[in-house]
Amino acid sequence: MTEIFTKENALRIINSIEGKKIDIRKTIEKSQTANSFGLMHTYCVPLDFDDKTRQTFPEIMGMEFMDYDDYVDEAYYERVEKHLEEGNGIYITLAYVCEGSPKKGDSIYEFKEEGYNYDVEEDDYISYFGIYSANESVFLKHHSVGELFCSDTCNYGINIKKVNGEYVYRWGNHGGAACMTPPSFDEFHDLGNFDDFHDVSNPVNQLVLTVMKNCIVFE
Image (cartoon, rainbow, N blue to C red; front, side, top):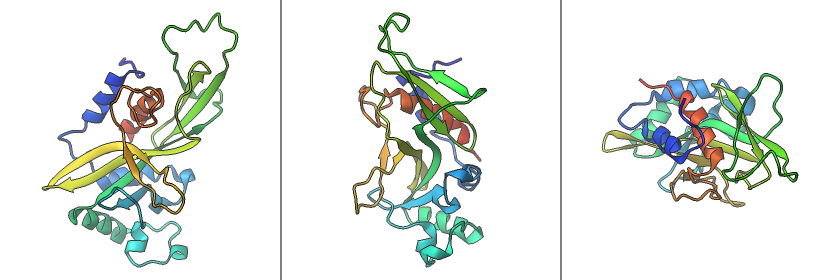
């Protein structure tokens, strides 16, 4: 089994979809089965040239906010495709991360820093991040030795754009915008910085990518 908590594995997952074609509709439909996360139409949102979300697809289609709580139909998917053909991007939510408390039988992955004796140190305490997706839910067990950089509630997924007739895919986080600013997409990067919220050296992102790859449906 490939070691999950390595930068190399994270980069392998990111690069694994190059040259493949994602079935956008089926991937959106699959993500929506995790309907406890929120409204169905928000699992796929439009992005503009600056990777910002200023409207949802129902709003682009002229619907008032109060009218589309769970609005997803054939016209919705046609508008998603048209948005891509117009040269814009879309973002599909694939996983949510927040502090959690696993129950008996839950899948738990433990992260331990190298060079730290967990059997001896007495200041150690245990915390968990829950990583939830339509495909599976897992927990990341970690210790107080070093801070794992992750917001209390994070939305992770994939950014899709059509460039010169070819699909371009980017993995990352959606949100974190300042007050009165549209939510934005932030791509994962490789700077070798454990403490960076969007770096693939961050073990939270390494496990998130492992979960998200199983949510993608290919043609």
